[in-house]
Amino acid sequence: MRLEDYWGVGPKTSERLRETLGEEAAVDAIESADVRALTDAGITRGRATRILRRANDEAGMDTLATRDTRDVYDDLLELASEYALTRHAADRIRVLTPLSDPGAAESRLDDVDAARAAWTGLDDEGREAVVAAFEAYDAAEGSERAAVDAALALREAGLDGTAFDALGAVDPDALREAADALSYVTAEGVAQGADERLDDLRARLADARNLENDAFDVLERVRETGVRDLADFRRAFADYVDRETRLSRSAIEEVAPEDAHDAADFVSTALRALVDDLERRAADREREIEDDLRASVADAREDVDRILAAVDDVALDLSLARFAAAHDLVRPALGGDCLAVEGARNPFLSDPDPVDYAVGDHDLSPPPGDRVTVLTGANSGGKTTLLETCCAVALLAAMGLPVPADRAAVGSFGAIVFHRRHASFNAGVLESTLKSIVPPLTDDGRTLMLVDEFEAITEPGRAADLLNGLVDLTVDRGALGVYVTHLADDLSPLPDTARIDGIFAQGLTADLDLRVDYQPRFGTVGKSTPEFIVSRLVANAGGRRERQGFERLAAAVGEEAVQRTLADAWEE
Picture 1 (spheres, rainbow, N blue to C red):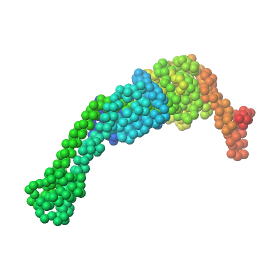
Picture 2 (picture 1 turned 60 degrees about the horizontal axis):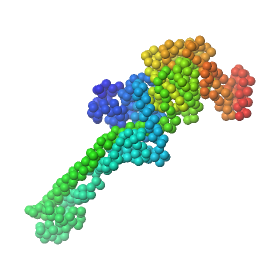
Picture 3 (picture 1 turned 120 degrees about the vertical axis):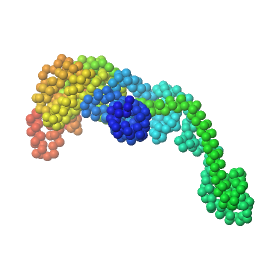
Picture 4 (picture 1 turned 30 degrees about the vertical axis):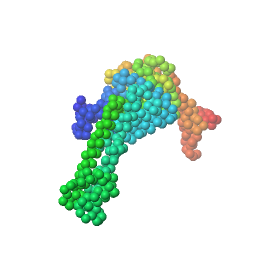
């Protein structure tokens, strides 16, 4: 493909990539989702992420059918990236997409399962060693030596070929030799410390260059010793060099000119010859040592190349494993025509209440068979949170990642429509909402509808009519859906494959917080129970007049119920 064929790569971006990476390398970077390569080339991280998401699986990205769905997607990847072991792993997590190929999703789940077993199988010391190995690799910005060092450290920490074939398939002794060689072979040549003789030659060369740069001072100092003729000067010069530097008398005598015109000519000619001789000898020795070092690397080249390709993949898999372990995620059963969860938890809450819920045909505990549910119940009862949880489960499963539940069964969806409640009450919001959520229902492929409180964007009577129409359309199109509303009593009879569920408030706690049973009751209309809210307002009133106002509301909703609620709360 040409660079311009990729989504988001226009003329300016493609020109920059060609100038910095070259066409072939830039295409490879996009195909391999290498955020680091694109950002190093001057592309902003956000733009690089968007380009790579589309390049990774454009059809999968089309699953994100609404802005709210995309927000949950972004939040999930940001949450997962917090467990990344390297910056590159975090970048790669952020470009994960829903996968249009079910086989690819199963394959990624296999990788995460294996990595999680390896990670949780380590003791605390082993995990600390793994984290330290990747920190060092990250600090070295993914160099060959750093990759080899990381691979050796990971093996020593207890990660072998059971989960990561590349780590188990290498010769560790050959890798250690290659690591030593790689530490000395640099773009500038052989580094200091590789060979004592080379280091000595370089030190003497530095002395010779310093003498050559200070030739006039050398000349004057030798003259100050009281030399009488050129022969005497030659001997005094050799003594001075031998005494003041790491250069030997013999080295000077070997290169000293025999036919110098005077002392100044002798010094300049001798020092130039000495520098030339040492440069030649140091270069010869460096080539010899570099050949030996590269031979050591060549002996392990196959293993080195395997490690270079594997270390970033291991970092990604272990990062996702840490995310899965930290949030107690489980592998979902993929396929079928359902979204069903047992013990599902909202991944964005610190201490969520688990719930069971489902739409479609499945073998889990919630009622199977209903393609659409209308979810009713108390204000602040967790209805929107349940929608968000269902969206998160569907998205994680689509990306081939484990989900926050005890058990889950998730089908494949061509579009996931999540729409939160919006407070604006105008025709523009209603129109934009309908334009956002209806078209995915009319496209090919199965759609998951998760829609919150239509009554927030139009008058209740019309909202009930629209909701009836959406439920009918969802069933007709073979989609699955969960619709949240307070208008259950205003709905026309629902299709046979739809049901009404309810979430119930149970009163107030001693701290006057709303006590809710977050587990929906299937086939039962939930109640908003405003008396609980009014009871709290009465109890928290800031003054006599304010209290009297709320007591008037209590009489309207049922003063006896309010008093009973307060009494129950204070008894706790």
